[in-house]
Image: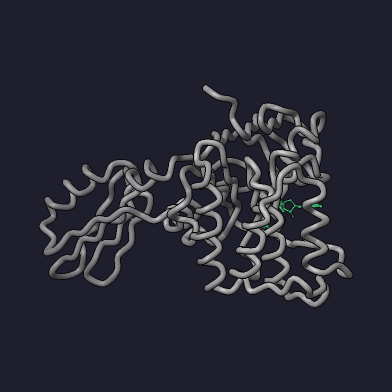
Length: 294
Ligand code: ATP
């Protein structure tokens, strides 16, 4: 097995008495797009900052490309790019100047990608940063992250402030294209609340709550495991219970169920109740997120 791109073992990070991250294990393999999901305050940004040596862990180990980000900061940071949730640049610089400045720290910089992204986002390179909107600053942050073509892209709410058209375009075209150009080597670690918009890209994910893992699965395995089952009855639905249910609701004449790994058994038991109609479909990752944290 090749060295994981990110490996966390029993990571703990406290702020005073708050356990922001509380014993987190996580492994991200090269070439994957890894989703890192959780409610507000779940500990996502704190975890990401530990990866980047912006925060020191209270306990546990962090490895990025096999290195300790605290001891081998340059080895780690030269191979990744990070887009924080609030992007900040020197306000007096123009867009062009920011790009030249950031490029000066990088061994490699793709100027063709730079000009394509400026066009795509309709960003004026002569504009100064202080005249950019929040969304435009995010766009600039994304360009500075993509142009060095890093092995690892760490994205913390990367689409915050972007309008829906740019957002969709950014995720599908920009992030997708970045990874497809070298799929074995380019890895994405993304924390987002817009799970639906990343659905097609995510290979594997972890959901955290209160700094702890709640669920970790490959996306395809998750879609196999969690099924939405609806059964319609001629009158009021009968009472229904099964240990494999994550959620069970009555909705008019329907039973609205979410099965966790035992959908065949649930369906068999339901059929015995002779519903008029029975449908089943995979949950989206967003629905899994909601059902898991309910
Ligand atoms: P969001 O989705 O809202 O960005 P998050 O999952 O990124 O949330 P964190 O920012 O990592 O969450 O915060 C985790 C916990 O740590 C929260 O309870 C938060 O209040 C606390 N916390 C974060 N930063 C600090 C700080 N500088 N000082 C004290 N507590 C903090």
